Amino acid sequence: MPNTKIMIKTVSENKSRRYYFCRTLFILLFLFLPGMIFSQETITGILYSDNKPVSITIKDGIITGIKKLKKLPAGDEGLIIAPGLIDNQVNGFAGVSFTFGGGTLSGDDVKKATEELWKAGVTTYLPTLTTNSHELLLKNFSVLGKLKDDPALLGSIPGFHLEGPFISPVDGYRGAHPLMHVRKPDWKEFLTLNKAAGNGIIHVTIAPEVEGAMDFIDKCKAAGIVVALGHHNGNAQQVTEAIDRGARIATHLGNGCANMINRHINPLWPQLSDDRLMISIIGDGFHLNPEEIRVFYKVKGPEKTIITSDVTSFASLNPGKYITEEGETIELTPEGMLRYPAQNVLYGSASPVKKGVVNVMKVTGCSLAEAIRMTSFNPAKLYGLDDRGEIAKGKRADIILFKLINDEMVIKKTYVRGNLVYKE
Image 1: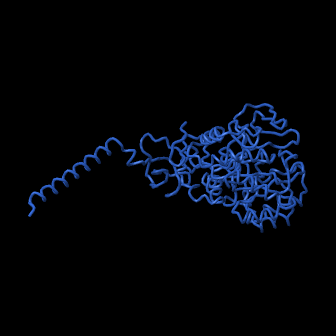
Image 2: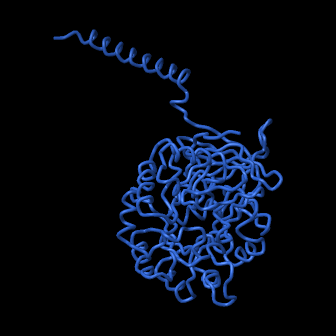
Image 3: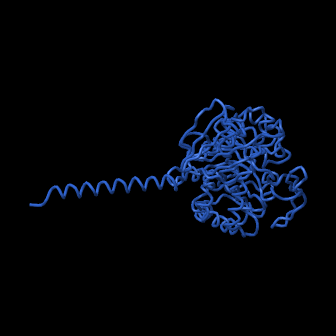
């Protein structure tokens, strides 16, 4: 018969050793590897929505807690805290173009543009490819499609915006889009482009009056793609039918429009009058006059308006005249206006969307909370990005901290998925 006393003693000793080993290991981890156990950070500042002190807890890239404070901690700068800006129309940035450049777009270019946009407070954006040859669009979508889910971009690119080539060929309405590449909607071509983009095209701007547009809208709706009306001269019947079929937003309303239009029969009235249609507006101070912004805002309100930039690669360049890859002359004025002199129209914007936020507040009298809604919450909702667009528990920690100084949003810090990607 085995000695039970010896067995009991051996088992007891083994349990004791395991206990002390586990306790020692835990203490060592607690002392030397706190980041591995508690990947948590707390941000304090003034919440954009109510102008009250707040602390926000972030863990593993997610907002885990929001606590109202009686006052900010000693030494706190009192920066405004808001969700990162979402821009649904970025043609390029910091010398990088998503459409032009002869098809030389590279992965490094996309990363450079993304990092520079982070500095401007943009944590989510849609690279926008405009009217060009099928070959160039295919090549650049292939580059973008491979990078969309790159871990280094932290999910800042949820998809792409195809603005054209299925737009009006008429001068004025097509804006600066090259006429030689404007063409009728072609679903097979679109599928080819979307395949190259890793099925990442989530927004298409189209002219409803062109042949084949309505069938194209039907197919986009069935595929879950947001359809926008833009660069068009659709009449009231065509606009209404397009909305009936699934069009959801007007691309940069008031632009992509001829300089001279009929005061009664024009594409503006039917888009403004239909409550089902959202609008995006470029608020940089050049694309729309203050009275236009005020009227558009009064009609659509903060619930149905998105502030966008239409920013281009020229945003970071010095004033002067530039020749595009297509041989067109573009002028960047000292005031920051980007002009296409050949048609006396604008050539996109040279300002990031944060400029539009402040300008729309200035000319409409809307609150900061409403302006941020139009630049964060609304676009997130439009594209079904339920994980971002607001400061709320469980959302991605896409957060900006900034000051409003002399009609400018000065970004001090940018967090993307809880990572501090920019600090002034």
